[in-house]
Amino acid sequence: MLLGTRSYNRLVLRLRAWAERESNHSMASPTPNSAGNSIYGSPRSPPNASRSSSRAPSPNSSFTHGYGPRSTHGHGTQGYGGITPPVQQGFRSPLFRTNRAPLLRVFVPSPEGDWLSDASVLECEEELKRAGLVGGLMRMGDVVWDMAVGEEGNAGRMIWDGSYLIDLDYTYSPIGDLPRYIPGFAFPPSYFHRIIRTAASSTSSANPILRLDISPWGAEIASSLQLLQDRVRTETPQGSFHNVVRWVHRSSFHLRSPQPSRSHGRTSVRVGNAGDNGLLDHRIPLPSTSPTGAPLFVDPGWYGKVVVETEGTNEALGDLQDRCGSGAFPPRATPNTTSGSNKDKDKEDGKLVWRILRERSRPGEIWLRTVSTKERLM
Image (cartoon, rainbow, N blue to C red; front, side, top):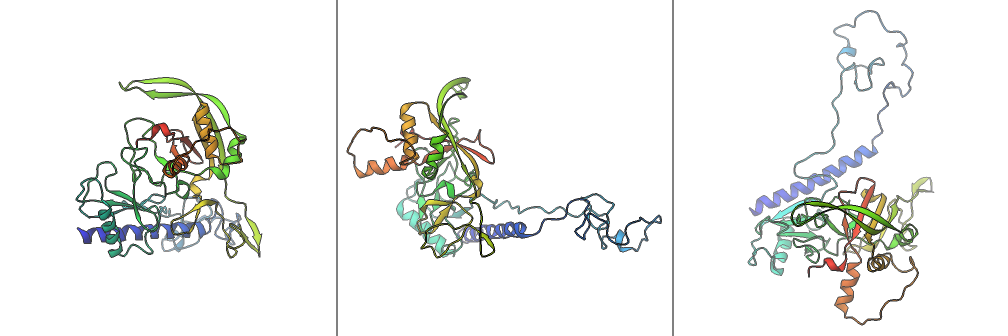
């Protein structure tokens, strides 16, 4: 079993490297000529092709066997000599999908049953090291599943944060969700879809939970904040559905790739401060960094419009204002309460918890809803 899981993990990570290499190659390769254009790069016909011959082509002619130039009288989907070329498919594999988290496997029996003890988690890390995956192949966000625990819900699933394996967070979900150390903006919105499962008890809990820091876009959110009346369809405990009208605070902000600037004849964007050795990049930097200290950037899957909403109460509005950071909204009076360090840490973590509304989201427009402290389970 151990040799099988090690070989499987190495195969999955090699497939990921292959898929990324093919993706980079397809982006760097020139686009094919449009339909009707000749191989000479001009819509005009090549030399000696102004008049079509009235005789049938010879059976031995290379033009009828796909070895000659492209026919200028055929359709754009035809290849050389009128033969339709095979359609180039993207990377496909039943073991790995692009823009999705890989699910690596280990087999470490746990004496705690469905709950992994600290010793079991450390043994899973050692198994990954023995397989030669740590130190180059694994990345932050890779999901590891201990097959010896079982497969009910998210049992046995852990997240690699770049240095260590960490358990899922059970503060807002009974079966676990992404921990606070994994920033959601650094991955595509559907990166953990069906890898980290969600509870199916209700429509709300079926939406995945992510940790997102929206404070860099707080001013844009404040400028478009509105109190709206929304009509939603809710499910009762008896299984019936009702249309409910509610008030919500809703706003939006946009994530766009930085505009390129010319630098020594090359198109580039400067990211960071003066001490970054002139790092040039085309991505949006995140305020947080990885546990290893490496800079993090917004994944292009988030580019477009991001809609945020919360309940229409004053309490929910204050929570949204706190999430936008200081300076986005006018200061308001808050009760001066003294709390311990653990409560302060939980409050700061609560500002980052969001749910992705799958039923409303689509490519280029992602909908988010705040997760309040009333939804805490522990």
